[in-house]
Image (cartoon, rainbow over the protein chains, first blue to last red):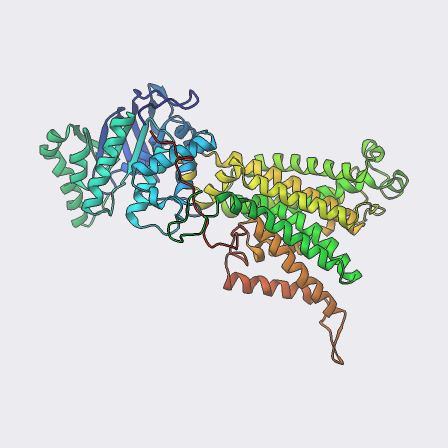
Length: 262
Length: 362
């Protein structure tokens, strides 16, 4: 599948950039995010790393419309979409996955992926055809008719990404998609994501704790710690930047000293 | 046609047979039970009439509950409105003048054939569902359920005290002609099952069932959960109001206080016992509880077993239905049907057609 037409004129053009500008978010007095900037360009894999509690998932929630920032803006193709609700954001081309799967358990694997396509307004026949193509892409076709109720971990992770991709996104936000995958599955997953980016021009935001995956797959990496930007750049410069290690060590030191592990 | 690889010689059963079966099975079961019960006794025929009415009410309830996964405690509001509409449109004018002197002139003069009145009841129920749904469907889970109960209280209060819409408080509407016979009621009940099935196959219902499975993931698939809940609530309200209209002309005495907790409990128990997440569950639940009710009713009035007269204290029906509900919830939390639609029984597995005809590859 090489063509990637926009959906009902609502979806943003593939060249658009998804950007967070000066995002701040407080929860009961705790600053989860403080003046955070991030851009997710099309056709690239952007990595987002940082210790637990750095605010990575909060940022994904804000980018996907699941949460609203106290300050700052979310721009898609230069247009302010900060206050737009999540289902509209999805139809506009911002798809996401969840850390904890959130699969539609009462449906089959095929139906899960079909729902992604139907939800953004595809016809039933097109939705089915596209779902089958996507399942094939993620080596899930042989499981297509199986119930999604009890899935092996690796299948569940891939299904989450497949369902998100079925909405034909311009941007795909992956929240720890490879957690718990073994090395072999990880390599397959990495090449599947790379193929999605190269074939469809999707802009991917990849959050993960696996540094092999992050540094092996990403074109650009942002480091977040304690709700603030620490450093960003291409993998080779971020890898050797002292602030990367510092941000992880800092949080460990705080944990050891008995503070919370934020 | 392709052969099944695992079972050579067997032609795989195509998916659509399973789909059609989810409609044919409830229709067939309903028809069969009606055919049998109508030949048993005259008291069975009376209870059969009520069973068909309850079936329409519970199928209406299930359109919302089984697809959205949100339990509604307030659907009797639609039943009450349907019963009221039917009564006001079919009671003869002279009769209305004597029992409801304060009635609005437009309602006093309104008079329609019973079948048309049923359709009007559906429209009124649908409008109430749309308005109430728009107000309530932003709520989730238990809050939504409690809010629907508030809707019932509100409707019952208005119907109890408004003399512009009905009789003086505490009095009943009588003189509703019973013009639809058992056969007509059966046909309407079958049609409502078809309507529920058709909605269940719609895109809107598929989205709702996805949100029922995972409310968090639904918006990430572009699904506007609130909108589809409002649609389901509207369709559901229309069908429940048809149930109310049928109830009015079966019971022939209508009073606001009848739409009470007992009635609410009975309809919810029917749905939950059958399995609240499917149409099949609604149909099975109504039939099982109605048959149980009928037998218990016979026992309450005393039944002879080989010279011994067994009789239950009156009022024990609801207690036993309550106990059955608890036992079912403990042993089969998904209800008797497990919350699934009827499954094609002849072959265990239907094949998913992934042949080149359905998959167009590059």
